[in-house]
Image 1 (cartoon, rainbow, N blue to C red):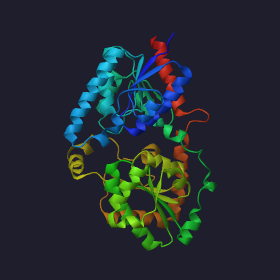
Image 2: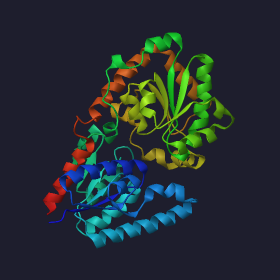
Image 3: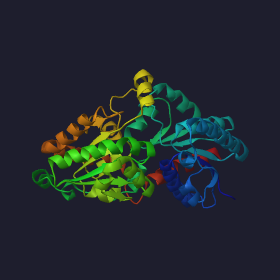
Length: 388
């Protein structure tokens, strides 16, 4: 008897990684399974048949209008494939803008849906919970509080742990972290600058981060400041965005964990990386910068859709403002500089923040040798076996 057909879909590099790990875990249960769908390079490397690769769209396309038409064509292609293949299960990974279109078709043809990475309806536009109930059979949650949120609203949901922590070394004890008292007294700080991974983030954050690095060195000349880049392309983007200041920068490529392991403090773009910073017990300031159009839309519409006051993951998980966040944009360079310098000057806050960050991220990691992908694979397998 042949194995099940599992249709998977992602639209971003992070989803591609999560899905590829899930394929590995599912292979243990279903060696003969067929994997097919919207697959990035990592999914394809694990044997997933690629109908379309949406993870490369940013590099391929120019104007926003071209992207819209391209996206619509790819969605229709994927919807047609679901109807034709009639998979045993659909596993959409994150990216609701893509995946709700696929979930709708799957339910019409009686294909069960196991959604991986719960849509953040708890953060904004909560009326979308109706769509979640209608178009999913089960949801895998990456954050502990999400399970109760969805279950109390009639959605089958299970907390599986956060896959980010499957990639990181075990959390160390506070005593193993770089000495804050020594750095605070000597001014010999190791500071990590993480301006994001996407081109837009890097373009908007590198300049302000460079200026803050100068402010830090003006106050503590012995401070060592390291920018991190996920790959060589990101490094080139950081250098380009830094302009004439490029020669001042120390940039490491694909060494974020190593950099954070030696860091006393970080200035980071908002996103999942803030959980990685927290895992290493590194106090931080979190910043983001949207463009002029996004600012206008946020003031006019988007801010009214949010149901939470805190916008970054570390603070959301903690349920309070553990670290300063300048979002959805940096008010001014002066505010950014003052916020970072104030945090560095306050030893009591630094020490307390380190303890808090280590405590709030510890529950997000799955106990080895299991991984988050093993937990979600169990849920997928249960859905397949129940449906057969």
